[in-house]
Image 1 (tube, rainbow, N blue to C red):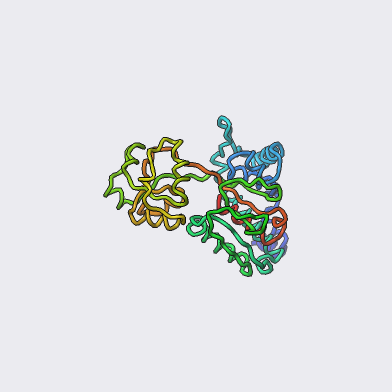
Image 2 (cartoon, one colour; image 1 turned 120 degrees about the vertical axis):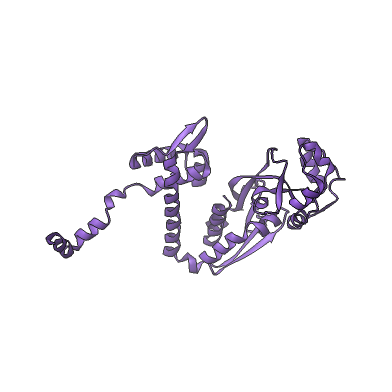
Length: 312
């Protein structure tokens, strides 16, 4: 009882018991470098997104390991593999990053003060089937912001301000543009269960020659990409399709044939099946691009960074 009275009279002692600040000693920059390395999968990738050198990043991670007393990565061949401890810690550091972002927004008043229009150009499939959830997030963060999605499979000229931010599958080479590599996306052949029950499930590449296929974009261009892979497809297989990827996807869902679609789109549709699942997927890069001058603007930088985090 006497001890309780002493503690009650001395509020500083209570605060000291409740929060031991000495245990919170590691550097946030070290934690940020650690999380970037986990998410990018390599020191080079983390160094690129953080704008640092690999040796600097390596020293920061080593310092964090020393501060926490745990091993965060193991080198397997040329790869850097997170340890179980690293995977557990990454969840906490991810929350720290979100809290830091929220603090930054609150401190600068961005959630209320960012306004104006941001034009984002992306493919029709990306615009309709992937981006809506991140638009909800942006609306919550910056309710005064106006966002215009230009759903177009053609490349818009950012230097001529046909758009402010572009999501592309090719890296632009113009010196006034800055780009961030997001990831390598994958795609494969898909068809509806209804179609496969009717037409049969191909067991090997040669079987594709007997199936109806759906093109989106230009059919000849699609055949040009498929020919080097030994796919026995001709114009006769592509009797239906559309310039619009969303329309072509709906045709495939309706049972009209086999289509090539991004895995992260197709795998969310329960009525669609992967065709020839043993084949290696098609891969293609995803780049986020904007004009160098726009990247210093608060509203464009906010949208750019949120898109980059989301698309990963």
